[in-house]
Length: 438
Image (cartoon, rainbow, N blue to C red):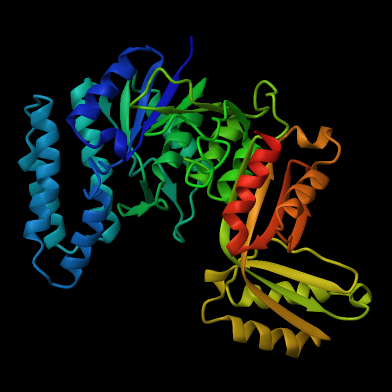
């Protein structure tokens, strides 16, 4: 016996039919005592997410544009859910309070957070669970940074008061104030992980509309195999490249407490999904756990004779991109060369200034800029025990005529990053999947 914290994403709370599935899932396991929910997502193709409508509503309110119609549309979504479940909820009172606060000039964070707030209140009523607002529990400092330990203590104290409870995800509040602060988009995953840690959960179940993670993007590889078990570290590597169905920041609170995460499918609750844990579970039949990638990177290569003898060279180079508020992804180096791999969007309107600073402060012999580069991560905790992984990658791509622009292996030996031209990106993913999986 243990406590399970379960989080339901937007597609899982989109309408009354989905909420009936939630009830069946919750009632199937008495350990599922604490629930975190998102705002209602799309019910069908072409539909709108409630969060998107609230963002638009805020823009209309700030621009003094009439928002009554959009406000009524949002209210109608919740009314349809309540009526579909046979609830006698006084939605008018809830929305009258929201409308009054909008007229008073409330913050955008308040308006946008009402999606999760209303969702949690309705679901708590439907399940006969306690509703617990996260505004004064998920705490941020004055600069909007999550206060992890303070949040853990606040949640732990509140959870001790409830046998069963529903929490809204995605938002919290500035410590010591009554002001709401939002997590980044998809932040309900983070809320769920924070609640799991505070509840000392035996499992954090994250329910969405897919049956866990796949070994490759199904939009690129036909019917990729599912990932049954994966470690926190591998998840981090893959999610950074866009492969995860879980907000990448959600890993850390659960990882700190050693709590496994199980990604499940609300529409197929019998599927076991993917279990994420410290060790990653049983070794599978493949030496890799997954392949993921992203296009649109730029590589800035700096060449200077005797660079390795010039103390502070790398520090000065990094200081230049720091001054421009630019994040880098990888820094492959040689004796006389330094390359910076940066997402191209980070360099928009900044590339010329960066290059000018490099020339002025570093005095390089040459700078070469290559854009339209894609990065592919081949990830697996078993790779460090296997000889010739990099050779297999190079040979497989060479046999298909795909030129490797960059090859970099992490020091933990669980990932190899390959850089190729964007035009070769999807074919390279398929080639590598076939090489290591089937």
